Figure 1 (spheres, rainbow, N blue to C red):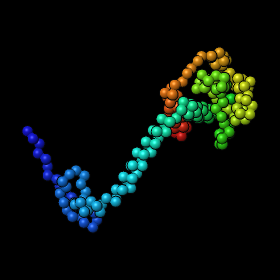
Figure 2: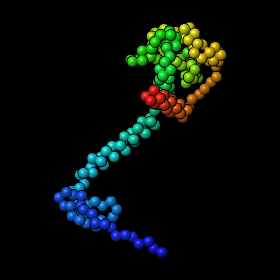
Figure 3: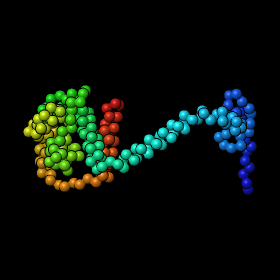
Figure 4: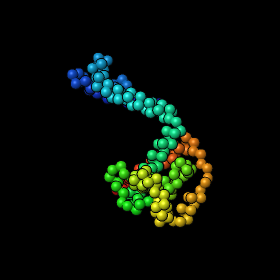
Length: 199
């Protein structure tokens, strides 16, 4: 049994100077004739231009991503991790891990300082127990203020966890895919923390 198609209802032409009544021959038809279509076309030009620009932007983004080296991905992942650490410690209201002073969150005066440096222990660069909010003064100009950092770290995470960090000599090799996952994970965690702070 064939289903009968209902006849199309008459519409008014979208062109303001025409406004003639017509029966559309296809779905989405808004003008009565090719002449009216030519008049109506410029109206859609900005939208079409924007769509093409969006496609081009996405294509450029994909090509730039393919050109990135392992080091570029590592740098981005480290930035995402460090931002998470600063956001985590700000949300918790922590003081500087090494000096115990209040941190100036208003400017650019807070670093995510590693207890065991990234240079000496690269396998711990993304370990949340090994990284805490620290004043730029202590992290950069006092070489991390390691003695006071250890004291603050014991107070914060306990002697057992600090001993485990100091004894950890494992080897971790991060592939580009691992690094991308880490970057995505910490960006998401930072977003969640910031959402929680805003609420």
